[in-house]
Length: 120
Image (cartoon, rainbow, N blue to C red; front, side, top):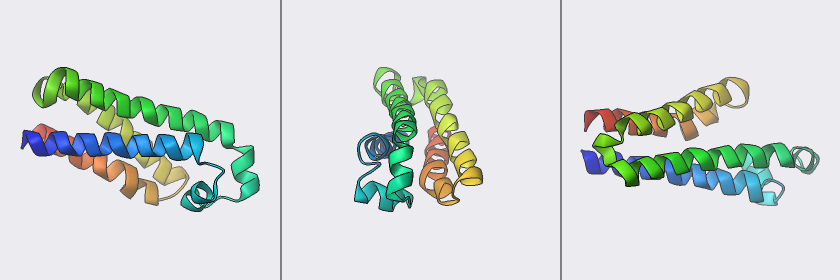
């Protein structure tokens, strides 16, 4: 069970690194605009805000990886829980204010990883 929890934590971290790349580097590209359903004008005017948001996603991923490598699943449980809860809260807020897709893409994977973390 610990291995499955660790794999899911790594998957959540990888997902947030992907968000970092999308928001920091691909925001104004056709792929980024299609992903976030934005117009070229909107993407250009919000580029700095998106990059800042991407950086925060990178910090969340880094926190998960740090806790997992430095402490493991069992000893790192409090730190992993903190970062996973941050992701769930951000996902719920994003779903309420931007798009319900964020709940499924961001919050649910973190919630499942957290659940398995506590079951392990």
